[in-house]
Image (tube, rainbow, N blue to C red; front, side, top):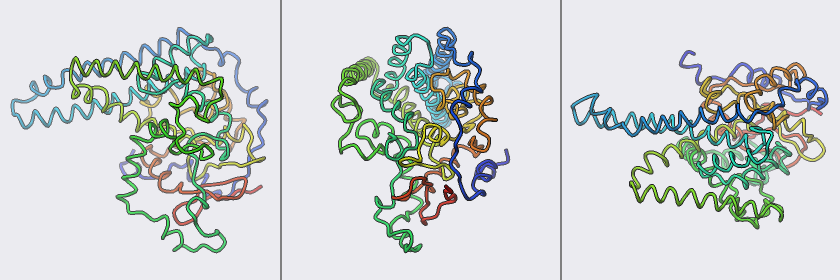
Length: 406
């Protein structure tokens, strides 16, 4: 890839953008299901455990290498200043790769939450609790709201995450009378402030969502939290599971505290918390780009169906082989996952190829480089209209690149 192509839209995105209009799909779930071979639904506990073991091997390997960073720096050069420079570069590399590994652990926990790793529910539960707790995600609480997301994908009234603000939320004038200056006065930001907001969202947004429903559905009251068993997010019969999640998170924090007592806070920061924060950046990017895009619709009321919600998904080859190897196809084949959430991740590439002919033009793929796609969505997906049943994001100038055609 030529360097400047990192800052260019992918041809698939350009093709959708140039259409200018959108007719909602009416594809039969029966036809989609018929395209998938029955054996692709089969879940192998042994195969899943192999992928988990392989992933944890690399995670532990990164940690072992990091414990020798000072020795590697001393071996590389005898100059103290250069040793510090080498150590700094190696720590950054460790945080980056271990952050990828931690995000992959979260992705495997995500698969367990869908029951996609084993035909035995207890196996999925044990794996999910262990993996998600290790990266400080409350397994049951997250799983329950994530299931709601799958049942209501891009339904602006019922979905759980990344609910876009509306014209009314920003108190913008009616679109029929608003002029460019109206949008500029309310929505315009300096690039530095936009970068600051992006930084906060990427590194802290997921935990803020768990703690107090930041960027979650506004139908819930203030203070709504994944850690509160009485939260409106959960049904009364689910509250005992939230307590179990909280106990698991508390146990993990005790283990970390014990590590800090035996070692030091500095060790905990360098080996765990720094890559944990980097992992949050990847988790937020992965999940945000799955459904938030200027060419992807949201629906209200009768215009939403399960199939339309699933099709409001973009497959992206994020980071090439790294995304497939460490993120376990969570973005490369996410559209197929939304149709068949219990199919194991290692079968999803075949499912994607099987359903493409059925989906036709409604299969959404985007080869735009990941970081540019993130910046594009963050800066262009500003708000949606307060009225209407098929909605596309509008930018800071009140402009949408696609209009619905019913």
